[in-house]
Image 1 (cartoon, helix red, strand yellow):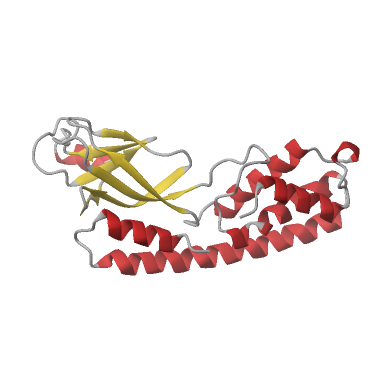
Image 2 (cartoon, helix red, strand yellow):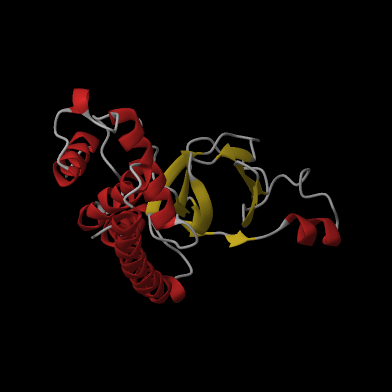
Length: 224
């Protein structure tokens, strides 16, 4: 798995400026382009699928979502699938969803940066298991490793090259790299569609799931 330092080296070799002290481009600048590139690759599609586990606490309904969260594809509580809901629906029925307690947790809401369980859990230590679509973690240092599948990591260098050549006013070359990045984006869209279709089929008939099944599926989803 390549690190950001490896991608910087590939960028510099392509532009033939391997001496960073005598270059048009700083490492900080290149890292920023690589980071923007991975966001551009993942925007608007469920390309990066992550697994998240939170542990329930008695009488607590609110749980934080991870950085980069986009949407929930699946939520289960103690191995049981939960129904997704929206605030408008809950308010329409009785508006008391924030007060519901006791009984079985059977649905959830996403509000801002938090997941809310309905009803309040009455146990501590139960798994709240989420399969989510997310943006990749930010790239900030040469030691960071991109989270996107390894075979798509060259697209980040391509994106950075499109920005780099634009900076030095080699517009035609920059456009070529822009076109190449669009091709990478199309491939990412196709892969995301295939993965989500297969995920849908695998989960379609499951009314009760367990963490081991989720973990195996999650690992499969992230095969590149």
